[in-house]
Amino acid sequence: MIRTPLVSAFRRRSHISHGHSCLAIIAGLFLVLLCQQVSAQLRIANWNVYNNPDNPSEDNLMRAVFQGISDQSANGFADSIDIITLHEIDTAGTSRIPNLLTQVDPSANYQIAYTASVGGDKNAIAYNANTVQLVGTGMTTLNNPSGPRDILRGQFRPIGYTSSDADFYVYSMHFKAGSSESGTRNNEATYVRANSDNLGSVNVIYAGDFNFYSASESGYQTIRSSGNGQGFDPVLDLGYRMPGTSDVTYASGRRFDFQFVTGELTDSEGMDMIPGSYRVYPSNFGSSLSDHRPVVADYQIPAVMDAAILPFDLIYQLNESAEILLSVENIADVLAAAGADELDYIVSVTGELLGSYADTAFALEGANLHSIFLDTSTPGIKTGTILVNSTSFAVENASFEFPISYTVVPEPTAVALLMLGIALLCNRRRTSRFDGV
Image (cartoon, rainbow, N blue to C red; front, top):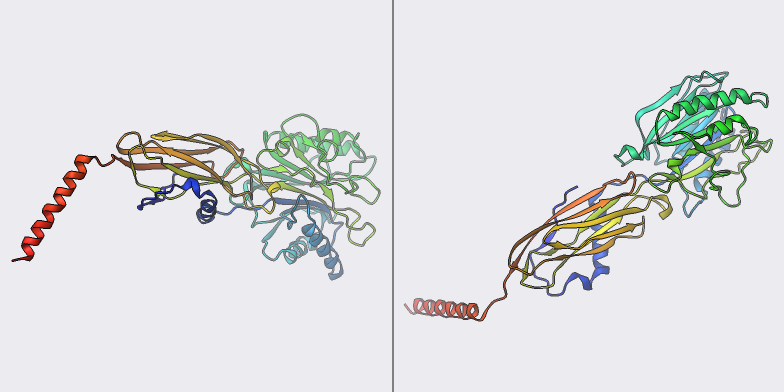
């Protein structure tokens, strides 16, 4: 990204190094005006809704759960649901649930996709199209040859990002129930893993009702086996469970419902599950709504870089101290710093400029300011370029380029001053003679 520098036609005798705090505010205003907005951190949930809701009373119960999930604070922020995978959802639910989600967040634009019905049950994915968009293969129904229900896969990208490195896949699935069906569930897990392994090393979330009766079950081990799509249990493998919350998702006290994630969502780069955000939302068991509890986790989004240079002089005297102030900021649109990846970047220069930096910027912490010094050791027209390049994974606006041009003039000499004085005197005499005519 090449930007034309802002310059000042006026001479400044006191240089910007004495006013960095004020200039930081000005730089922040420039950044807000110049850069596009991108989506905030993501809140993703999954829930077996037990063929509900089907009437106004169940609408009220489900709306209260969605409101509670949205209001729940984790890592310093609360946020409405961006994506939710739904299981045992019936035809009525495919229209009622998006409406309930919108009632909780009227600014959202919830869309829903779902598989064909099996015994009245579907797998579905509802998502806020204002914060995430379908890309690539979009919504894909996988005709599950090993179990009773098809699997839905969505390829998403946070709004405002252009790199495919920011993409992530969400699988919505409901494996075969029953303590005697572990072999069927393992076959389903094998099918899912073969599908995700073919995607390569990418961001994947396996969400749904897996009906695993224990961590020793073969299907659970298959999801977590090595390969491109290796899934990690946020509780037992990663320790990402929110402190003070339960792991139990089903009325019997078992962990049937999960969000397994691939290693690309745990490497502290780009999009990631936020440690300490994985939890089971404590909706009451025994209600008429569902015998499952929702699983919720928050995900950071990649960094967004912006850079700007503040107004600077066009003309400098020989050997005058001169600098340009460069501002670099992580402007990811998040509610808390934990909601975005850190911005790692390098500043370099060419031509007759001096200064290089390697630094990190965190979301919501304002701009980093760097002085770029100008060579004024010889007179003439000077040129150079300021380059800012980010090394962060999936960063938006990965590079900036600022072409710089300025002029260095020699100090006036005694002879030059004498000649200027004579010229002024002669001009005055000519004027006086003309006025006397």
